[in-house]
Image 1 (cartoon, rainbow, N blue to C red):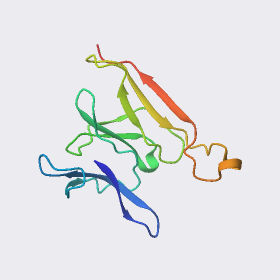
Image 2 (image 1 turned 45 degrees about the vertical axis):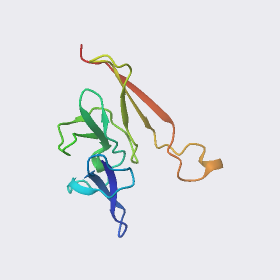
Image 3 (image 1 turned 90 degrees about the vertical axis):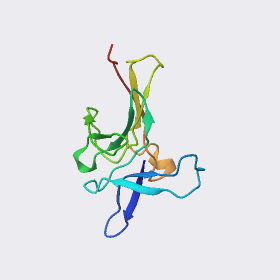
Image 4 (image 1 turned 180 degrees about the vertical axis):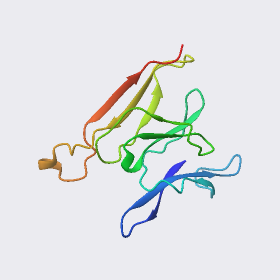
Length: 135
């Protein structure tokens, strides 16, 4: 699953796309589009990972919530972790391999870190949030 740029003008538009390849295919072999969230216009951070199921969190357009996609590109819910601006790339990881383990979300604050030195375009401070697991 990845975010695909579908239009650059009049504004940048990108959305989650689920693509599949043949079983045993190489990383660089062709893939086929299996599903697209056509309602999304500006989502970032789509990385499919396994943690008590397959999930991909993504930023939520102007709504400022983290959408959660499953591996069929359905939306079973959202993460309650608001952000102010930009399109942070959320990554949710278990803190251990134990079932029901706590989770951490690593993302960024989009606050233009050291802009006077680095200029525009930094992703801001790294933010880490922790949530209790289900036991």
